[in-house]
Length: 166
Image (cartoon, rainbow, N blue to C red; front, side):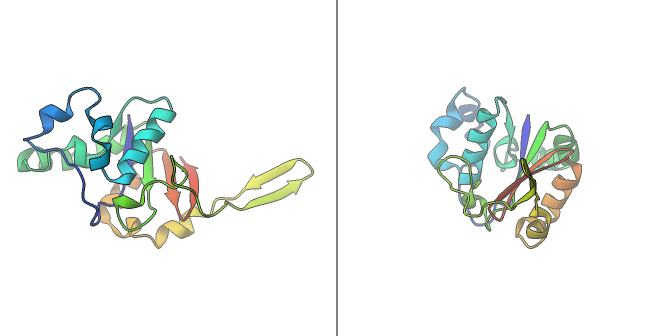
């Protein structure tokens, strides 16, 4: 599975509850409910499908939000969840989940990544995402810091850039 690390912020959207979990477990239910999901989740779904992976772990959908015991048990397993993910998508763009993943779907990336010419036929893209990452809302949260540290592989979306870290 691929895990998603993001900031909920003020973005409203569908969450799993005791009342809707059976409906959400039906095959295809999340594709049908896309209009009720924040952009970061629908973009992550598209990215994961495009990568040929089948499963995406998202806290607001994989943890029952109105069941305190289940929620606490899942919170206590967050390190294991992120450690065992094939990859963690770090969505550090924008202040909340409505920002999506620039460069995925119809959401354009506004900033081109810097490309240095090394030789006649050799170019190098130098990622500067860590500097940009430090000043984001995502970087100000303890939860997301824990998710970052636990993740062995990260695909980072920040400041119009996309970088892979392992």
